Length: 427
Image (cartoon, rainbow, N blue to C red):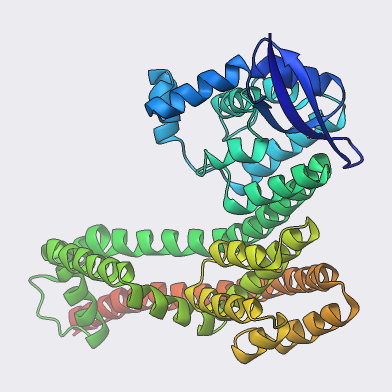
């Protein structure tokens, strides 16, 4: 039997330290959990055989990566795992929170997670987390080894929950956090489904008419001495371009896409596109509301769970996708390091709206910055829902008018040619 020194927390958050005997680290961890404690650190006691063996291995320089000792199938999976969707991560987090709330020890809960259906996150993820925790690592450290699944925001919040003894509550907040973001993402998708469907169907119909139907009509006009109307001549020219030079059109489209992709891959190009997105008519307002709501919600969640301000700002900066906003947050973080409040440097950036600045000032004055950020997040998410409805209501009639114009032009060109041919026959 070996001796282990441990640190753990009661459900109340109180830190407990002590010594216990166990065959190995995993056995010591089980003993701690059976006492109803949340283990924070479990290490072999100095002078014990386990500690001596660990020191000897370190002295010999036997350092092996975790991936090198994993089974080949698991190692292959970890290399190809994809980033989960927001709803998938929310479901996983909710399931883990429910199991821990029921009184299960962490290792038992993780073992149960391997048998639960969690779409998008394979059972191997829970198995690896369980193995890491059984070896004495904290849950946050275990999650940090799987950055594809668990982001910095996730890991830091779990670490804060472990430190405060409120892991279950933190996991619930994380689940709620990802649920909200999944709902916002779903609103974006739903708002664009119908316009995208109408646009695709309209383009397919026009291409089919230009490349298949129109040539059959043109064969009727050939051989007749008829002066075709201008609209028909334009339509014939477009049809010839589609049927005879489709490869050139395809080449131009591919070249344009490649040039755009190259421009988008440069730092200046990415910044320019992000700037355009923020200032674009109609769409720009939707994007700004989404980013401001995301900023407020993420920062609120982190501060609410005890993450330090500078760390919270850094994680929020990584979460925000727009480079213009990222730069503003980075400058704010630099000035906060000098002891200034959040509201003042944000105001100097002249990017964030005055409403956010004013509410943050009130939150700082009252000592409730997370509460102010929560109100801001709720406000921007409600405004985003309205803006998405307005955008959808504007796009639909515009698409209908454009499609009607295209179809009307086709019909006018064909019918005017037929009228001209009929008039010529009558003469």
